[in-house]
Length: 84
Image (cartoon, rainbow, N blue to C red; front, side):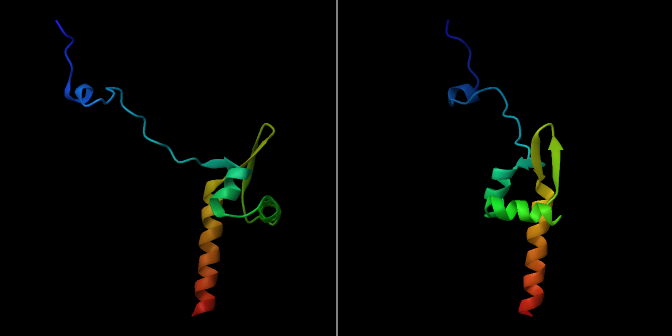
């Protein structure tokens, strides 16, 4: 007697649920650079100026993703004010 299959198995799908993807709250420096399209030197400059927030976890320096979004939002606001 063949094993009983449900509709998802017949369709070739796994019966296990996929875990929802969670957006990271911190990223490493190279990932932060890629996220906003800048080089490492500029990233470290922005960190030094206090415009991008970082946290240390052991020996790793992690960039707070929210601070990247805030930086870009601030730049956009400045550009909107200048263009008016």
